[in-house]
Image (cartoon, helix red, strand yellow):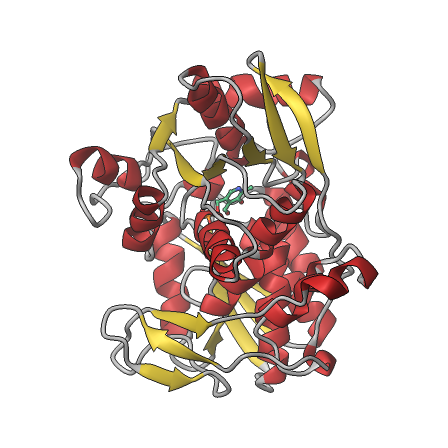
Length: 372
Ligand SMILES: Cc1ncc(COP(=O)(O)O)c(C=O)c1O
């Protein structure tokens, strides 16, 4: 049992606060919620803890150890490699149990679901978050219903089903699946990776791990794919917490990469807007980030701008090029994951040497049909 600093849910816009120990995923009038939490990491204890996500225990908003739902999630390797002729650190997030970084968020969110004694959850996903939520619900013995667009990879649908989740195939794009899930959430707890702040407080462990793996330093740049921006926001929260605790003296520049076929954040970034520019999702092989209306879009834009990062886009050709290039180096990743690698190559090309840049392979290739 660890002693956590008090925390509560808070409406992002109005500041209205709610008790975090009561099941709630949005404000009274439907507002987006954040978690107000000031963790205190027990740095001295780290050396004696296993190389697992829960080593940052005091920073994870789950009160009782008995609530923890775990699939043995390990710290993922951070490999030093060369990309487009430049040195780069690449974090192997595809090695999680369900094959993507979403396990970070699901581990903490479903542990909280267990702690809140919630029996049934609903969620919507382009596939990977659905796999992660379904797997952790299976481990926790919580019933779950996942809404996915009907064009989702057959392998991801099969994986969600295999975990025993009820799957709902929704005609239309990712927004249609989100709408259907929100409707269902009127009578169930919404374990949404986009809406639910407990998810982001699991994903933030990405930053804690990178910091530890770089000898307790923050990198200069972090380049991550962004659809709903859970990894971008998780990294932002994690590095901000490290800064607030005096464990690093700077924030990395956080860069978000989108596909040119669906780029509401990129358009807003270029136009100097605070909110995503309305768009429709075009056909793209990066199915995980074809998000036309990212619910936390203004938070993502603020995080990128505040850290001195950029939002950039990559073409389908670049995605395919870097998917193949990574495979030829032994890393089999899905196209959505190749988005970050392609974006990293762009960022590196315009940069002076000597900066420490971290990116991630966010999803495994085995659950995607590449057709080649
Ligand atoms: C493999 C992979 N990478 C990146 C992302 C992007 O995550 P987010 O939509 O939270 O930005 C996803 C989302 O599903 C994904 O599946």
